[in-house]
Amino acid sequence: MPVDLRSDTVTRPTPEMYAAMQTAPLGDDVLQDDPTVQELEALAAEMSGKEAAMFVSSGTQSNQIAIAVHCERGSSIIAEEESHILYYEGGGPAVIAGVVSWTVPSNRGTMDPEAIEKRILTEDIHRPATSLICVENTHNRHGGAIVPIEALWAYREISDRNGVKLHLDGARAFNASVALGVPISEVTAPFDSVSLCLSKGLRSPVGSVLCGPADFIEKGRKWRKRLGGGMRQAGILAACGLVSLRQMIDRLAEDHANANILANGLQGQNGLTTHPHLVETNMVMVDTVAPAAEWQARLQAAGVWCFPVAKNRLRLVTHADVSTADVQNAIDVFSELSRQTAR
Image (cartoon, rainbow, N blue to C red; front, side, top):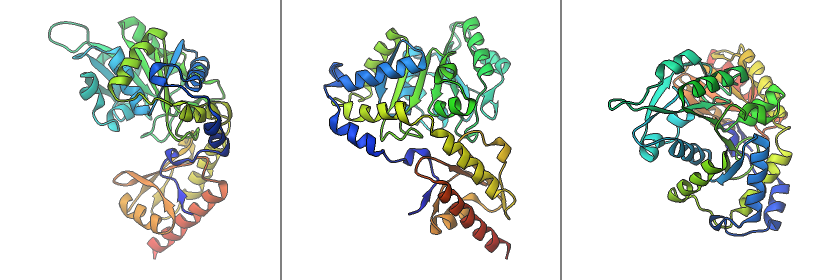
């Protein structure tokens, strides 16, 4: 079996999830009478400290629904320049919500509050007034970096001062909470709305939950319907989400530990540079002297799968289906290829 470090999205459901799928009581979620979906939504709302929640098919759908609910067409959002919302969601803010996106640079995913405030536009006939600030925590393209909680509250102050909403793309927010040693509610507290993925490190096969005020979620249900997100007997999938939230969170610490082993094991190998002190959660960025695509091809042939995320950078993601032994195997493969490069 290959060591699959492409993403934590490749995790497989657990035996408990398969059992839960077989026995889950079902209804029709579009008609809002699926009891398993209702149970998942209630649990997600409670854990995130929000009034209500809605089960959706993906983190992308969750983010795009949030933007559409918060914003009027022709208004604008602010997001970090390499955020998932702008980089990996197919231009959704423009196509779905009809908003303009302003970007802000960051230090490993943490935007300067002053830089955000300078981007905020007030309403007049000329400008797309700012409706929403979007934050990603942990930050994917910055290697699973954690945005500190004090920065999140600084963003809250800016939002309140300027009358705009604040949304969290929390695809890996549980990784942040485990690494920080705080409940997920502390990570989500500053936000008006929160997207939480179940299908990454938490091992569900499908799904995210969008959390926020009850009236916000009610409007979100209409957007979910518009986007084709009504999943009928969705309790089969929601049953996995319940297992994720009840059993899969604490074990994320194992992924973080394996990422640190991986980063330290690769450091100093010929043609490679890692930064172990920057590994905060379950991602390792590896800078390569040779093109990253060449490394990817050689690694794949040797049974280690990963993705290049820049011309000279690979991203390695640890998860529940990668053991410590798998990590050591990956280090050994890198080491052999590195020695071949040096010859």
